[in-house]
Structure formats: structure tokens, C-alpha cells
Length: 434
Image (cartoon, rainbow, N blue to C red; front, top):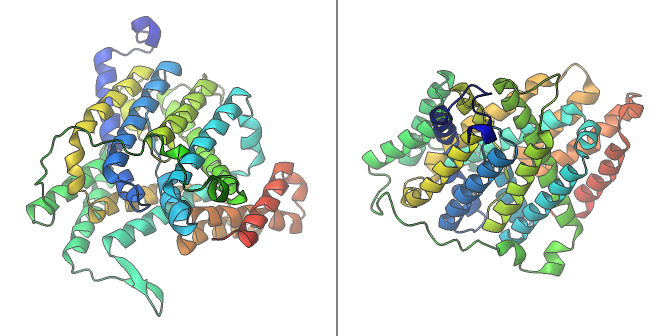
């Protein structure tokens, strides 16, 4: 084991890697309860999604550890699950089975992109500003969903949205969770989001709003979502369509840059990056793509690398053994599905809001003094929550960016791929149902 994971060379031990793996698990364990809540909105069985989430995280993390030997754990990604449920299924009217097929297809494409080493070419083709804008916009979208689930923001016929009744028990519980989670995050507590969720659920139980009548431990629920990706309602109306192509490309776009950024961030903290290059990057990306494909077969949205892995690195995790331990903890978590009964929308709302805040911090990289950049970035970020569609925000950004750059006389700076995407997203905006 020492030779395979290079424990001595990385100045670590099995015990240290186990502690790091547990730390990473606690930092990202909130996804076990948030993901079923979000995908449940798409009509999926929450118990099955809980199992699929745990299995996808376990398999993805173990593949990363064995193949790339990095202390980077994987699980279904935030933002990607929201796009899956609220945009693809609810907004576009696609079945959740067809949405799973889109996730599977994006994973397969990602595998081929990795094998044929097209990663750098694609990364260089997309302007950095649009990458940052996509991440920040998804953050606002997630936070908006959290505010809605908490009852803090509600619908209004006159103003579309307004402040909800803050005196209702569920909303008060969510506000408590938001405050506690923010305090933990500001104090830089490792696993702050998970602890905030756990404390909110505990208060819900103590106050009688939620009940643990189903117990705490049980056998895992049935995995009814397994293989559903290959059972869409209609192959002709859902799979072989331009809309499906756009959905697959959007999944691919989000996970591609999210993964690249996360891998680089965690690897930098661990000291793996040399001369601005990440060793074994191809293996890491292949592990990520494989996890997405396997996760779709289990029945969950896109699986991706988690930046929360930095918490494990911070306590000494340096090899893939950390990721493997994290995966094994997700395996153990399979037997705690009864806790889903107390993890309501109000309990998960603080996690959505705080994670949204974290994602929105990427806006600091934008040069707002240049209007040819500020305009497409602004529309990308703002329209995601306002249209309740991640894809619409991305589409507007990819349409406006070439326009503003050409008008500014900077059209030659754009990669030809950007003009192809311009045409594709114009078709998406004006000729596809939304």
C-alpha cells in the first residue's frame, strides 16, 4: 500500500489519510440530503436518489484515488443537480429518465475528450469571463432556490416575488439554519455546511416540526432509478432532438470547467502543481468523467470533483487513499436513509444559500470596467435566477459575448468555436421551447 499510494514519499500515513478522508466526507456529506431534495422536485424517488448519490460518490472517489492518486473526492455536483431538476425536467418538460440519459451522454463525451486530449483546446476556446460568470450565476440560482424553499421569498402577482411570512415555523427554522451556517463558515469550521444542516435538523426535531419516527439506521432503500437513463418516455420526442443536444452540451460545459477549476484548486493547496501544470491531470479528468457516467446509470445527476476536498488536504491528506476513505464513508452512509424524513426543504435551504454565496465569489475575477465583458457577464449571472434556467443564462452569455467583442473591434480575439456556439445558442433561445 505504501508503494502504490506513495505514502512515505508524500510524508503521510494510513491513519493520517483516514482522518483526512473523514474530514472530507463531513465537509461534503450534506449532498446526501440536498441532492434527493432537489431531484425529488423532478419527480424522482428521494430514497432511490439517496442511494444513487452515495454510490456515485463512493465509486467516483475510489476511482479518483486508485487511478489518479489524488486526495480529491467526488459526488453529484451542486448546480448541476439544480439544472437537471428545475431547468431540464420542470422548465423544459423532459422526463427525468431523459435527463439522466443526457447526463450519461455528457459523461461519455467527456471521456472521449479526455482520451483524445482535447481538454486544453476547449478550455482555451472559452473566455475566462464566461467561465466565472457561469459559476457565479449558478450560485445565485441555487441561493434563490434555497430562499424559496425556506419561504423567505415567495411568489406575488403584482411584483412576481416578495418577502414571505418570516413568522411561520418552517421559515424560522430555515433562518436559524442560515445564521448558524454563516457563523460556522465565517469561523472557517471544516464541514460548516454539513454541521449547519445537522444542527438545523436537530432543532427541527426538538421543536416537533420534524419527526424521527422512522428511526436512524436501516437497510438502504431500493435503487429504483438504476438503469432509468436508458428508459426515456420517448426516444423520438426526447432523445433525438436539438433540445437534447443543447442539454448535453450544457451539462458538459458546466462539469468540464467546474472539474478543471476544482482539480487545480485542491492540487494547488496540496502542493501538486508544478510550473502551472497538474501531473496526472488526464487520469483525474478520466476518473471524473467515468464517475459521471456511472452515476447516471445509478440514477443521479452529474458527479464531479468537490472543492470541499481541500478540508481533507488541510488536515494532511496527500494521496488517493484519502479519496478512497471518503468513498468508504459514503458506503457506510447508505444505512442512514431514515434521516431523509427530517431533512426537509427548510433544513436544506441554508446549505443551498451558503453554497450559492461561495460560488458567487468568482465574480471578483471580472473586469467590470470593460463593458464588452461586463454586459454578457451581467446577463449570464442575472438571468439564471430570473428565468429559473441555468441554460438560458449560459445561452445569453454565449450570444452576447461575441456581439459585444465584435462591436468593440476585438472579434479576432475569439476562438472560431465561439462563433459556432453563438449560432447554436441563438437557435436554442429563439427556436426551442422553454
